Length: 470
Image (cartoon, rainbow, N blue to C red; front, side, top):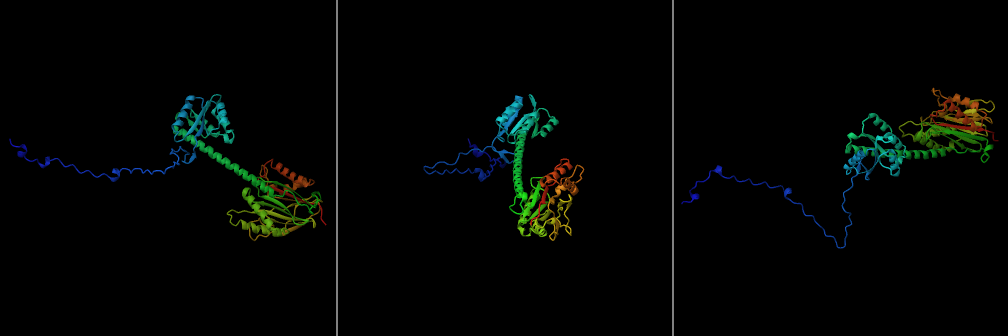
C-alpha cells in the first residue's frame, strides 16, 4: 500500500495555521523585582538604641486642620434616656481613630454638677429635657462655674424647636443638635467646634487679664509720677507754717490719664505750678504725658520763665511727634508763684486761666490775660509764641488751676457746668480750707450731672499765699 503522506496533495495557504505574534517585551519596571534589603551586621556588643516603631496617635484637629490637642477630648453626657446616651457613646467610638474621646454619662442635673466638681471636662453634651430641671436651667448653672472649670456645652434635643435653640445659644451653648438628625460626623464636628470656641475664649480671657494687669501697673506708675507731697517755703519749715500751701484733686476717667500737674520748688520763696491736659485718654495720652514730664526736667533752666518753658515744651513735643501720623497736642498752663514778691507770673498754651479767690473781697475771677492772646496748644505750630502775664497777690489769696474736664461736665440736657458754674461753686465755699474747697466743687459738679460720671479726666490744683516772705 502506498504511503499516504507521499500521495497526498499540499494544503492551501489559507488553511495553514497562522504563526502566533511575538509577545511584546514587558516594561523593565514590571519585571524587575525590588532589590533585596541589605542587612548590615552590627559590631559585637552593640545594642539597638532606637525606639520601636509605633504608629503615631491620631492628633485632634480643628475645622481648619490645625492641631488642637493630642489628649482625648473629655466629655460628659447628661441624658436621662440611657439608650440615647449609649447611642451617642457609640457614635463617638465610631470616629475614635479620627478624634479620640473619653466620655462618661450621668442622668440628672445634680449628678452632672457633682461629676464636674469631682472631675471637670472639656465638653458637656446636654439633653434639653432632664428630670427635675430643664437643660437650660443646668446650662445657666454651668455658666456660673469658675472660668477654669466651665465646660463648653452642646445641647441635644428630640424636638427641633427654634425658640429652644435660640434660648440655648443666648445662655452660652456652643451648638444645638437634634437627636433624630444626629450622625457621628455631625456630632464630632459640633464637639470640636465647641472645644475650639472654649479654648479661644480662654485665650481671649487670658489676654484680657494680662492687659488689665499691665494697665493696672501702668496706672500705679503714672500715679507715682504725680506729687505725693508738696514743698514748703522756706524749705524745712513746718507745713503749717509754710508761706505757700497746695492741694489737689485728680479724677481720671480711665486707667491711664492725659491730665497731670506738678509743683516744682524753684527757690526758697518761689514755686512753679504746671498743669497739662493731653488730647484723648488711655495709653497714647499717658505716653505724651510722660514725654512732657521728661521735657520739663530737660528745661529746668527755663523754669523761672513761663513763656520760655512753654516755648521749649512746644519745640520738644513737635520734634517727638514728627513721625506720628495722627495729630496730638496738649494744653498747658505754667505759673510761678513768688511768696517774696507776692506775685504770680504765668503763660498758657490753649489752657483756661486760673481763678483767683480774693481773701479781702470774696471775689472769684480769672487772672488777667496777657496783653496778647494766649498761645495755642503745645505741639501744633512750630513758631507759636506764649506771652507771659503777671498778677499781684495778697496774703490769703488763693488760686485754682483746672483742666477742662471739670467745666465740660454736662447735665442730662447737655448743658455744661462751665466756668461760670465753677466760679459760683467756689464763691459758695470760699470760707472752706483748700482741701474741703476742692471736694465741695467736685460734689457740686456731681449734683449738676445728677450723679453721672465725668466724660473727661479732671484735675484741680489749688495754691494759697498764706503770708509774704521777707
